[in-house]
Structures are given as C-alpha cells and as structure tokens.
Length: 210
Ligand SMILES: Nc1ncnc2c1ncn2[C@@H]1O[C@H](COP(=O)(O)OP(=O)(O)O)[C@@H](O)[C@H]1O
Ligand SMILES: [Mg+2]
Image (tube, rainbow, N blue to C red):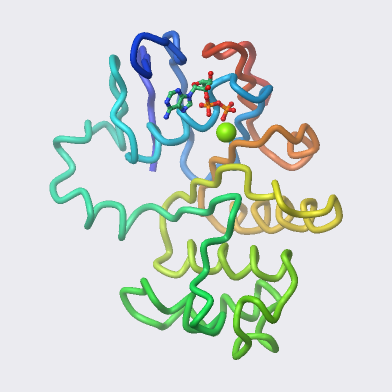
C-alpha cells in the first residue's frame, strides 16, 4: 500500500508539533523515521497509521483518504499491523495464543512462530521468555493477518543492542517478502537496515535519505 502525507500538521492544544509534512511511503519498503526525542516521530507515525487524525492536511492510502476507506476497523484489521515499545502481550496467554488472538484465520501462526525463531517457546507465557523473545512474539502478532504495512513505534526501546539489530534484520527480511514497515526510532543504527530514512527535526522533515 502506498501512503502519502500531504501538508500534515498537528497541534496538541496550542502547541504545533507537526509543521507541514509531505512524505510518500512506498509499498513494501522499510522506512525509518528517525530524530531526537520530541521531534514529532510518534505523532507522525500515529497519523500515518490511522490512529490519530491530523489537525490539517491529508493522508492517502493507495490514493484514498480515510473517509473513503469504509469501515476503519476492518481496514486496519486487513491492512495494518502495529508494534509498540512495550510489547503489550497478554500475560495470561501463551505466546502462541497471543499471536492467534487477533487473527482472522490461524493459517500463518505456525510459520510465523518458525520464522521469528520462537516456535520452541510458543507454549510459554510472556513473562517466561526474554525481552527480545517477547518483542519477536509482538512482531509475529502484527504480521498474523498478512498486513500490507506494519507500523512500529520505538520497537527496540526496551532491548539491548544485539536484540535491537535482530529486530531490524527481521523487518528487512519481511520487507523483502513484500510487507512494508514504517518504524519510528531514536536509534540511528536502524538507518543501516532501512530502505528510506526520514529524519525529523522540530516537527519538520529535515532530510530524506534513500
Ligand atoms: N498527547 C500529547 N499532548 C500534548 N503534547 C504532546 C502529546 N504527545 C506529544 N506531545 C508533544 O509533541 C511533541 C512531539 O512529540 P512526539 O510526537 O511524541 O515526538 P517523538 O516521538 O519524536 O519523541 C513533543 O513536544 C511532545 O511533548
Ligand atoms: Mg516517540
């Protein structure tokens, strides 16, 4: 899915935190949004991922604005995956049950457990595995409905650098298979793995590297 932001602005109260952002996210690309804390990464990611309505400007999904997409819950379920800094797995469910929870059908659960290297841990509860393994389960959960694009906000914020690089490597591998990733991170190392790097500063796109 191609995602275009056109003149996107955002205010929290009177504070303007996005100052007119114009970007295009290409289908199947691994796009990193980097920048200092407070530069507007989370706000921009939330708007691109349909979770937040911009104060001004528009976002198009394959040429359609939000109000043209029909049922928004259905649109998200079929097209978008989400990964957050804190994994938000349900501690009363096993990793496998967490991954299957939002699945439209369970056909991809086993292969995702395999490809994310957590098949042997699939019957453990989330507090019985490491932080890196939990985050891999959260990535599997985001991928379970074969979304066109996965949005991740600081997905490695709680991981050591080895596990963080492992997560970027996974994003790169899955993007080569056609899933898009849009990842906000203050970790500059992500730039070594992404296809496109959007650098934010003070609510503006400072530079785009590809
Ligand atoms: N819910 C909110 N209410 C008010 N201000 C907010 C809110 N969320 C973020 N901000 C402010 O907006 C600016 C951009 O924040 P954010 O998008 O979270 O940036 P980043 O993810 O790059 O750290 C910051 O100045 C932050 O304090
Ligand atoms: Mg943030």
